[in-house]
Length: 436
Image 1 (spheres, rainbow, N blue to C red):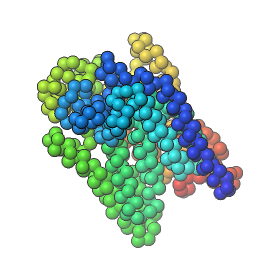
Image 2: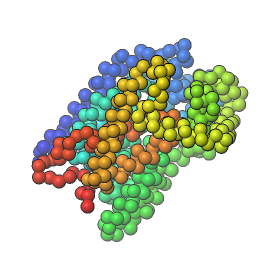
Image 3: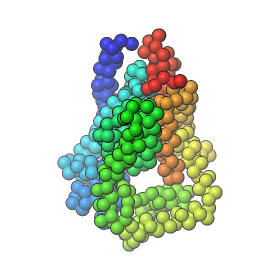
Image 4: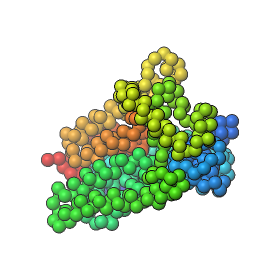
């Protein structure tokens, strides 16, 4: 492929982004009117994030993760509630206009994710693979639904996390400390949108630093461990102000959010296995009264104790549920009972869809493994580490969205014939590095 042809391919990227945004805006026009629902305390307007944004916009600070106005909270990361609160300040709290604006912003962020997807796929699959990946994301049903129909941090996290991953694929090629510091800072900002992403950083950073060392690029290669440390310090520096705020406001040492054990107890605490809303004050009046009387810190501490005790007494329950959640995360299969199918009539279609994507992803992994294992390793780190939090809590398709762009790239590697991904008949594999 000539440089002119490559430039022509790249020039199509803005049109792909624009097409993705217009598609999502059409969906927004059909969904935004359902958000303001006073009878349900506006829960569809962001649930906990929406209630915190309401508190911010009304002058109560970062507080009140449920409908009643309560004290300071660390139940959610700060980035998206702050964005939503700005929309509320400008266009009104829980108004139709605010609903349209925030879903439009989500849609724009999701559309812009085509850009890091393009460059990430270009690094792994070549320029043709980049075009296919960006186009697929523009029309990808999950990407459209979770950006144009749901008020949550999916699109914001997806854009930040995919950009961070794109940098992780290339950062080993430079020894400049500032580049590694910048990458670490971006990872810290991403964690302020969704802290689950932070668990991947040490592994990607070590992998990149190790590749730098193995490259044997003279004196610069000796800085590999320094670069690894600088990345971690930069991420920690970004998280420090929020950690200090949480300590001052709640008296707890919490880098981002404090509700992990509530979520563990919610899905690993006996009755919670039958009723997903068992432990959440938003949908359980008894728990809400306990929340109001005890306060956030004491309430979550109690849930921590209950969760640990229950798991200690029923380890087989945890193992069984974790395996089921892992299966559900990648297949959509939870139960095929008649009762489940009556309650979820669209479940078979969702199972077929999710299983198809996972099959193509696994096929892509197999192809990568044979052709270019070096390019595959960051993807394996991502899909191996990121979901672990959700295997122990809630494996909903919602919580797969931050890694969905990389899943798509792997699925394309499994679906498209290699000859379609090559630049020309005479060129060998176009990866980051040729396999030995």
